Image (cartoon, rainbow, N blue to C red; front, top):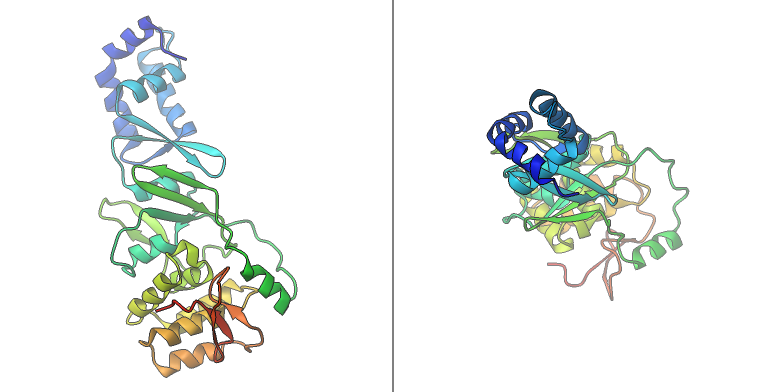
Length: 297
């Protein structure tokens, strides 16, 4: 509801004081609704206890007349964040999901595996633990990869970026590290080895298979093959993603024989597998028993 004229006059007379309190309380970080309400209630108790000013009045006034900005995120339900002035974009999703972490194309960017800043920002908040999905069968693999990769609907456009909130498999945040951004913000992101696995598993969140292959090439001087193998075992996928990862390592042309052998021996190669979803007329690697796009370079 609009603020009445009398209330607006009262708020305007205290605008600078209120702004100073909100700015100091926010301290450069986003706020969820309950956090903002607590701050606004304290201001009302301090400044407006006799002015019949409510939390909604003060919130509306600050959004309309000051530097408080409201961002509605689709998660996929609508959840609201409030920021004061501009803010480090990598603090937004972590404010909504404090236990989550940046992944896929965003992790590639933060690890220097791509030479541009992508328009999409990917953040993973893990699902609750689930039981393993039964026995693996060739028909099950074929049917799954003939379809499109499932894409989350939890996407939000804000200031030229698309924020994606993913719900990945439960891993206990395995392979997640914290890095300091130039703004001073501390953000959680998958480490190099976990990133290489995630992008092989979900190439649509990584710019596609050609982007994934380039990332494997660039990562070679810094990646630990032992750590990569250990991470893949810990993630315990039902599908044989060691075939995809081994193929990328082999195809990159920058890894030694030992790295290739590590994934050839990772587990028995029993099934035909797929590098990507819904491929048309793919090529086939006999070595890795893997279908891959003919356009892969």
